[in-house]
Image (tube, rainbow, N blue to C red; front, side, top):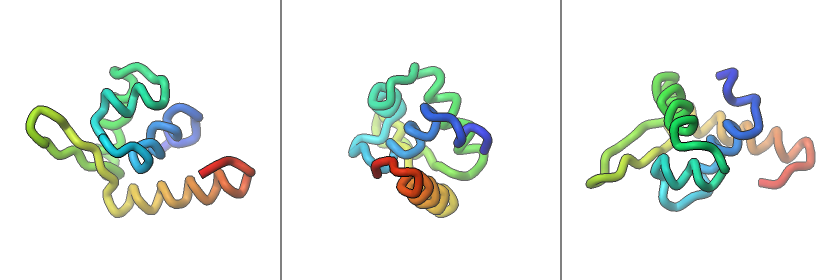
Length: 86
């Protein structure tokens, strides 16, 4: 969970909701982190039961679990309280 207090990991976590294609490579490019860093974070969040990974052909699609969705909503609210953009 400590990974959700740094800027790039938070941006990656929130990008899952914003991006239409939710595979690791496209997510990493959208928030300017390396593929290996994004994959490592996503694997950690899957282990923490915040995300799920489903295989669709050759792609692994990333989605929030119910717990992950609640955390995402909390992060959005927190960012809005401090004057950030949703």
